[in-house]
Image (cartoon, rainbow, N blue to C red; front, top):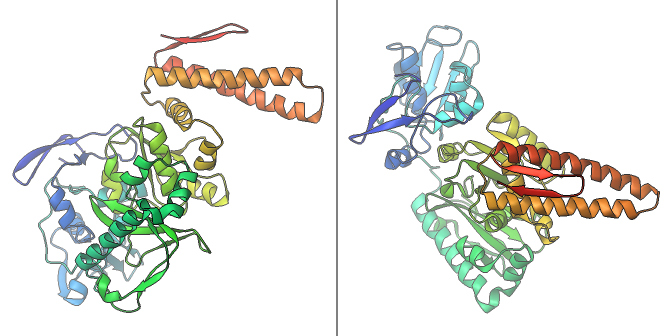
Amino acid sequence: MGYGDGAFSCCGNVVNIIKRSSTISSVYSPCLRVCRQYNQDWEGSGVKILTMYEQDLPGMVKKVSSHRGGEWHGPCPVCGGSKRFRIQPNHGDHGYFKCRDCGVGGDDVDYLVKVRSLTKAVAMREQRSQVSLAQPALPTPQPTLPKTSEWIDRNIWQRAVRDLCDQAHEDLISPGGDRGMQYLKSRGLKDETIRGAGLGYISAARNETAGKWGMTGKDVYVPGPCVAIPRYRAERICGVKFRQLEGQPKYLQVSGSRPVLYGADNIKHEYLIMTEGEFDCLLLRQETGGLCDVATIGSASSDIPAEDILSLTSVNKALLAYDLDDAGMKGSVKIASDYPGFICNARSPGDITDYHMQGNSLRHWAVEELLLAGADVPFSDIGHMYNARLREHDDLANEVDKMPDIPERSRMLYEHAAMCVNMSRLITAIKAAGYTVTHSDAVYGFGM
């Protein structure tokens, strides 16, 4: 079948492979609902390297060792070096390969990029795909080493982290959690948002034994006073982030935490807005009220975890709304370049929380950015947003007209010119959405 339309068999069911209109990938991908158990069972496994190599060079690989779960040798698919190409499919979370002649090597994503010449965006997507690039059939399961570090018993860790988060949440909503609740309210979060996210409060720092967390070595440090942010994937807690209310650094995480695309479990729309942090994500989701999906990697310097790529199958385009400081600007440029055509930079309002607390409408901002990106936005939201922007335009124009000829007036004239350009862009986008905007020199109107 290759890259064509068709179907494949999964757990006895025939499931259609759907073509996505997004440019995140140039290949076809399975529906998100396909064989979730298979996806979970194979999480963190790098056996795809061996499977892909056998597809590229059938019958050329030979097992030579049981080291690190098994090692296979064969000719290099890049330089052709004879039996100098080694594969350790069970090494780490994503396997390992290396050619001792040309030096090409890496994990399963690197194999797709360096051997099969895919872009990084496509390679990361295929790393989580249940369908191989060359064949529609699912690979035959192979014996593997434990999927997690030998130093962590994930079942014990999961119980410990749930106990921590449950207690922290109870403490937050109790009278003793006033300090944590005040901090969250100061960021514009409402009670239902706080409860829905399972946020918590820890009043004082403590150390817990590593054994309680299924770990060996030094104790597990739990800071305080702080706000606790549990980070989920498929209803399992992958990590806990702490926002310290005193001291530095501002953010810590509990030992054993894994990276996750926060909010990925709720993605169902064609357009996604990605914020820099969890609080901004929760606030924007709260204020947009289902207009679009909102998620975050957790910091400006992080990349989308490979385990979460599959959750983006319904997304046509992701808009970045990072802070406008140095870290936010660098992070937004990097991730947009890593996923060209799929992730693009929105006109960020700066710090989303500050923007909201200054009295600005995050919903109007999101409607404007989604409309300009080509999203299908409800008519009523477009009207409310456009009329609000028109009032801002008129207020600024009136203020400029009344101002004497001073340097400040020149700055405001420049601001007014930029606003006029934006109004023109909005009118074009509104017309492209099938609506009309009628206007004269003094009056603008919006309608069908």
